[in-house]
Length: 266
Image: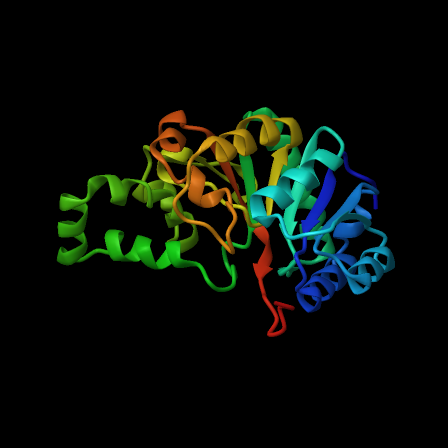
């Protein structure tokens, strides 16, 4: 299998059962063979985390204390080479086979550059795993019934920013929302950030753009909501700034399922 020009970075604050399960799936389905640039960021690490990283030939990035999702992904990206980087959390299992994995990663790298996109989403559209609250919210606003019509009438801004989630929810979303969604080849879609929020889960981004645009903006925002006392990027970027920028987002058919095992380690 030929090596592709990208890097893999995994953020794992404890949760080593999930991490092992994910890494086994990456090895089985060929992801880990696509590049030699592989990293695992281990905030508040212990020896088990280091052993897991080394066993699967990922370079451990060791941080003494928990620094949250924003801090963890920032430190991870800073240690990774320039160019396309695939950012994952420890509970994202690879559920597609070797051929599909290689094809989607290669296509994602090509399209990221071609469209100057802010991110390529690689969470599976067909089996994304739980939780996925946005799918339920889309159906609450865009199902074909009178109550949804009333909701869209009285909360048009809320309804609009859910439109991109239709790609996970319905067939032929480009027909339902042609103004905002464009279908590309190989079941990829192009969407505007005006109708789809930023996502942390299973994304391919340009390393420098991620640090200079996404991380910088999330750090700047004065957030009122935190996860375990830290910023998480998604909360900070769910804003008018994000929607008005109209960044280009690419949606792949998807490779990864959110699968957190029972033992999280915290």
